[in-house]
Image (cartoon, rainbow, N blue to C red; front, side, top):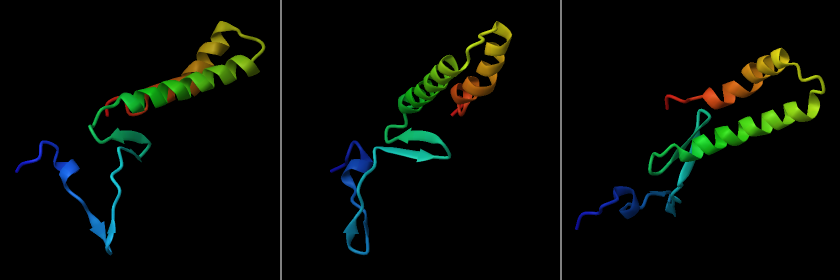
Length: 86
């Protein structure tokens, strides 16, 4: 009998102990799910960027547009753009 999902029908053991199956793994800062979808990574990046934006909003009292653009480019954009190609 062939399994549709090869990972679901295989059990792996090390020294007699069964290994648990992980559905989400973080490797090099990228969240990889068992079905290889990027939705978890996208949600993580959006939440991280939102937290940084909230921190900027709470701590910066003088909100000059030039300063805000520089803060966004420096602090927020790297979180959103990290591993976009992955």
